Length: 240
Image (tube, rainbow, N blue to C red; front, side, top):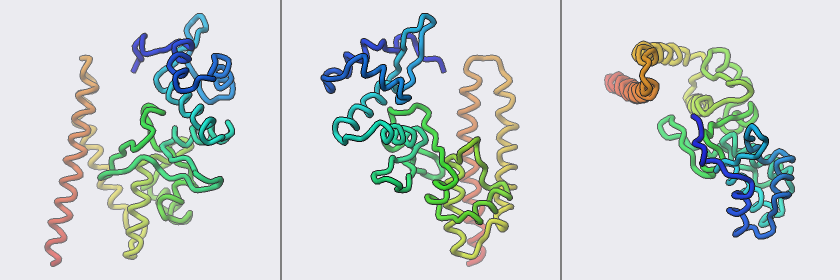
């Protein structure tokens, strides 16, 4: 979505907003932090910097970390990368990075630092996924072979973590990845059913068609989860 014109700040306006909290900050300092890759403001056609609210928050984070924690820029940059990927920065060198996006009924919700990154989506390396899920490498490879966990580009998303953690807990009952292929098949069928409903909406030319399709998709996803849980509960009740 395009950002409204006045949502952008000039470098002078950014300096004005930071000066109250960081009296020593200068335009040269801001330009230096940009050159080090800690911020990446957009540019106007004539070359002037355009800062967003996210850029401003990143600058505040950098300046606070320097002033209060005396962190070197290399560490601050690693912390920002962790935050951008939905992780909590390590408090000690080499410590495991834990997701800062909590899951509630499978839905990701941002817990802290929400202003640092818009559209903050959890992105985990393979090692981070293993550390946070409780699976070992062999188990993860098996899940991937059955299509239960899928890497998106170079990272795993929050959905992969939810699946991996659930499978890790189920292994305590002797259930293995190969036993769960029917879950994937059923889920794919549910996705196909939802797709049949929203595709006609996406083909409409009206401006609100996409928003309506997203609303229907969320509602059907919620209903699908409720129906699945009810059917499983009903089936299990016959075992008692």
